Image (cartoon, rainbow, N blue to C red; front, side):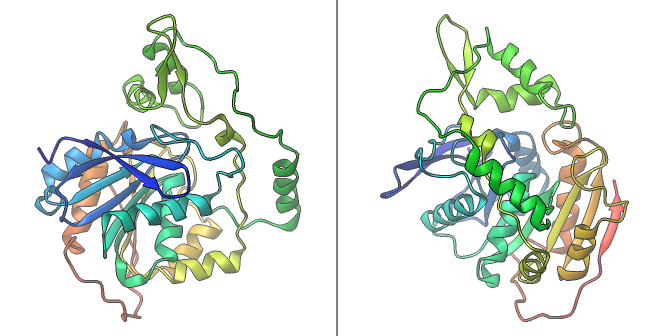
Amino acid sequence: MASIARERRFTIPGYDLTLAAKEWGTEGGAGVLCLHGYLDNANTWDNLIPLLMARQPELKRAHFVCLDFAGHGLSDYRHLQGDYTFDNSVKEARFVVKSLGWKRYAIMGHSMGSHLAFLLAATTEPDRITHLIVMEWFARFVIDAKQEAGILTATVTAPLPHATMRRQTYPSLHSAALARASSSPNMPLSIEAATLLTARTVRSVDPYPSVQFSSDPRLKNAPIAPRSKDLVRELLSRIACPVLALYGKEGLYMDPEKPDEYLEMTKTTVRKLDIVTVPGKHHFHLDDAVESTANAIVAWLARYPMHAPLAVKEQASGPIRRYKL
């Protein structure tokens, strides 16, 4: 059935890397590439996508492909000499799109995945991206030379990676999910949401039913390449498709109700931008505001149908709409 998730794999030739994904819907339908957040995985979409498909006829016929980034979920680790950079993640996402044969497609991302969705959209031919839906979108990469030097120092002084690294063992999936739910005070999760994410990123160990987290430990020291303000502005200006930016009222990155330099840059640069505040915390799409998230997306798609052609040559700036649910 189209409403049941299916597993899929994408092997990059000569790269010694296989990426895992979950997919919903029908091949040949409108393509939607879904990108998860840092240390999350494709299960982050398990509650939202079935609801979207049930609410919106066009989405019921769409083809959702939810990627596990390298080192996350069920995907392979990168080679010990391969860095977990955002640029590499975007390259791998492009490979997946090419493998799927999509000529035009939409992108939906959460947190880190929203930033990667933005980078993918900004570096792809504008007539190929039909819609961009970003949740808890952050663009705090405009930093000064002192901060950049600090990042560089931390990157080159980090210990060299090795193949075997000690991992904590949890007596059960439930105990691992409890640890995940409370791992970050800024990103609290219900035990139900934490269990969904944890189930795709643990491996069984002795004695049964013990588990260990299986994501690559090197992700915790992944380098972040700083972006200049001029580069961020230029990339934003390249996005021609409609953009829906969703933020949790108790979210992590940016409060759209308060002035923020980078959010203001986004509002003045992106041509067709809607900003929506929903109830909930950082993982609102998975946890405490799934219904509100689905309602916002369905309402937005009523104005920008998934099958609508993209007017690439349109230069006039559209109005910025802001509302709460």
